[in-house]
Amino acid sequence: EVGGLGPSTVAKQLIDAGMQIPGYRRSDKAVETILKRYIPPVTVLGGIIVGLIAGLSDFLGVFGSGIGILLTVGIIYQYYEILLRERAAEMYPAFRRIFGE
Image (tube, rainbow, N blue to C red; front, top):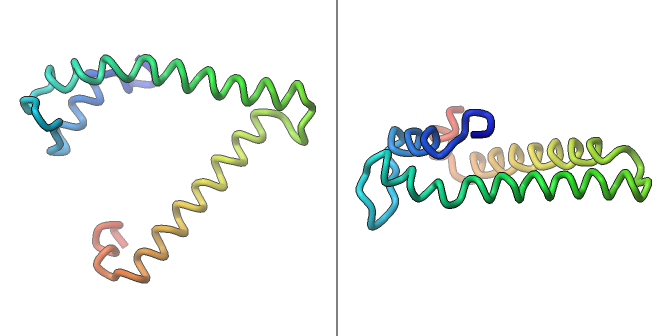
């Protein structure tokens, strides 16, 4: 379990949000069983990819450190998401209620 986001926690959050997986019962255990197949491998794969990016950029001497590059990409992506939300709210005023503005 990484950061409190294990299969049981995520399954409970999904069920509490009213979501379900088509073809399966709407219970914590059914969703947890499915998530147990995906969360551990994706967590390991994500860690490997982040480590490779940070290590490769440090090895090649890229401007800034590998962690600095990852941080920059994360910040730019957050700005991109904010701009998309603002643009959608301008184009479709009904979205303002969804976004809580």
